[in-house]
Length: 230
Image (cartoon, rainbow, N blue to C red; front, top):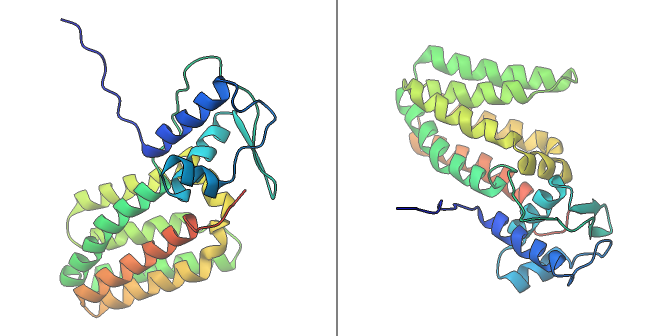
């Protein structure tokens, strides 16, 4: 008895495959500019962020060149079936973080004692110091989210948080972050962390949940904004 492997594809991968099919058929030739994100989204029946993720995946695969201010151009037609391995969708990652970390923040507010709150506060200060002194503050950012998770008293939650945070270094997420200039989101990131810290310190679970959701939602808005980033 022979079975065929069951494929599990991300939505952006299915969109990328449709674009590749048009290239392989000659409908879109190498050197030709692809339609704008808005037009592709309408034709494919998906959101612009999904199209954007698909184009970035094709760029990572060397099939598309994105020229700032000009759009996306086909570099070459793949010789065989396209295999993408560019990481999880940025929107999926951030939505998963919102779902999980909102509840983690609420639980931390209910359970955190003075010492965990001090640890969370120290990560906020470390992030501010790294930024002000011109250092990469991403490690302190991770330390903040891990400290919030550990404040729940459930170490397994910290592992989940770290796994989702590290997923942001997949090729699609990383390149899209550069395109939307996510590093310039520093003031909002700091304000978001401070709001979460304040709610946990006040042992206000509902406010801690809202603050974490607002923080991650703001990042998602930057990543998925409704405008061309090419």
